Amino acid sequence: MSENGFTLVELMVVIVIIGLLATVVVINVLPSQDRAMVEKTKADIATLSQALEMYRLDNLTYPGAAEGLDALVTPPPTLARPERYRSGGYIKKLPADPWGRAYQYANPGRSGAFDVYSLGADGAPGGEDENADIYSSDI
Image (cartoon, rainbow, N blue to C red; front, side, top):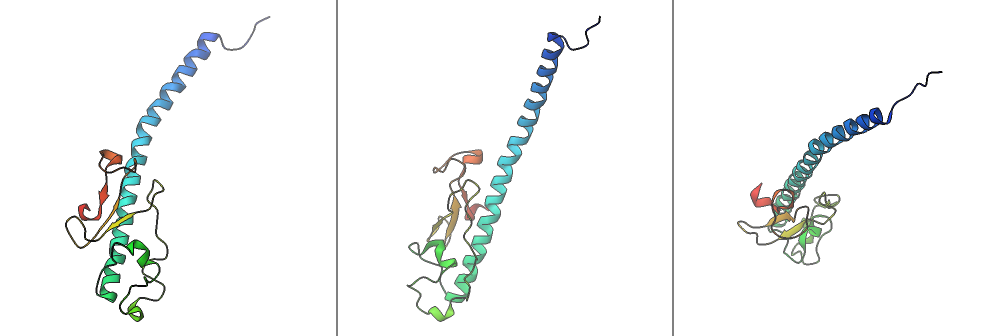
């Protein structure tokens, strides 16, 4: 009677090969996801910056720091001429950054009238790579 099947050594070799293949995939896929999240952040910041420019064209000023980015969705009560505010707002909904946090707004900005920024993957100021802060003035 012959027994057909795999020996323990053959099974271990297959498991090691599968483990190596999984490691190669993880090493190559995860950095791509980080880069994609940074690129999405840059695209969102560019969209918000364009909406802020449209707001300024209609209202002759950027939203103040107190009004923040919410002024792009609903008219702030401090508007000098509310009739100039665009019906429906300047953006339908404020996006969250890819890490689930709200984008930040500063007026005045570091090197211009305003800054829209994300604190990166770690949610803390500073950092490197995917943890680096991403500012509209740097895009």
